[in-house]
Image (cartoon, rainbow, N blue to C red; front, side, top):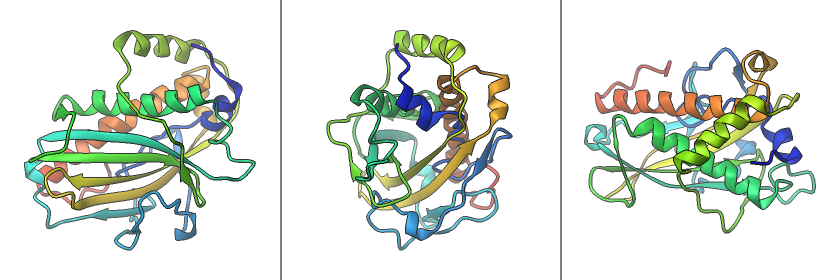
Length: 242
């Protein structure tokens, strides 16, 4: 697997951490403050979102009237990539191969992190929570077409893990995501979030490269998303430290 310079620049030092559900910041990341002017357009309607509190994401929405306990299945609809049309767009400068790889790594980590406590399904339906997320930039963006995220086969994940150990990179970067969670039977939105996080050089003490940062980021975030969804199943909306 080749490590391309443009991708190194955009994800170097990045830990996605609590991108979607405002999970606790790990010691190697910090939240990047945002305002509503940074919305990309991916979510369409942002009127339900409010400024996050404490350790939450920058902007969050949870439907407390939704029956969260019924969501025993998860459908990862797709992980999109939305880029601005600016000449300096970092996402736009990625090669098509790196763009595809980036969304696939997010999808794979989500599936691996949630499958322990939720059934991963391939379509929306009753008792299914649909997750649709996108890596975006903090400005008006448009979707990169022809990117359909998928779960990487085990052999490619192992290859990626090897690259995580041996890759090189020196920068510190930031990454931003927006996500919507909908009811699989009705299509009704039950949650949505916008967040941006940046990595620190502390991560260099554990992994020698940008792919290592990415591996830690996706796995850390997915594990805590799993924990947060379990709390919501129990009707716990007050625990904002996950």
